[in-house]
Image 1: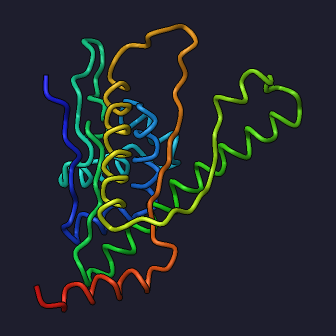
Image 2 (image 1 turned 180 degrees about the vertical axis):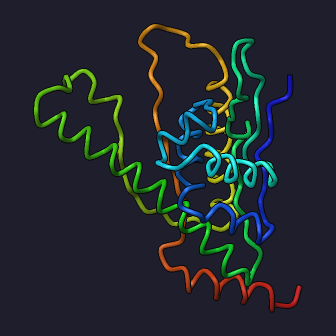
Amino acid sequence: MARPQPLTLREPAALKALAHPVRQDLIALLDDNTVVTATAASERVGMSPSAVSHHLRLLEKYGIVERVEASEDARERPWRLRPGGLNLSPAAGDRSGQAAVMVLVRRQVDRQLERMERLLRADEEGEVEEADEGTLGFAFTRARLSRDEARELVHRIEVILEELRARRAEPSRSEDELEYSLAASVLPTDPEEFVRTVQRERSSPR
């Protein structure tokens, strides 16, 4: 069976829909590989089931979430995040879309930092064994790359992330298997210089 491909969102209305804080909470909830009903989700986000259903239906409109079949004794069909993940790509000049992407990125970064803080506290209290420390990682580095090399690096990272994303749908392979959160970014350290370089290349005669 072919792996689901990421959904690319460029439509301003879809990106704007993602920026709503309640929808961000719902996406974060479902991104934990969770399947929930609107009623169950309402308890997590502090809203009524009808209000949560409204937000979920709007996300469904843009293909971000989808319904799954309920069990025989369930009265309400649950929801899940669309398999394959999301690729947010606002059009040039779409300020609201760009702002929505930044809101989501900040949310993901904040969640990653919260996990790191909890792990550091556990380490201080002696709850993390020395043998487990090699399974945790958080690192920064800089590298000089051509734009082609940067594209290749991004592609390699995407291949790894896609392989790991596909494994989430598979049953656990061992009793000690845990879910890890991975975050990666490849960004120019000087965005203005990057823009000038791109513009210069576009204006150069071929």
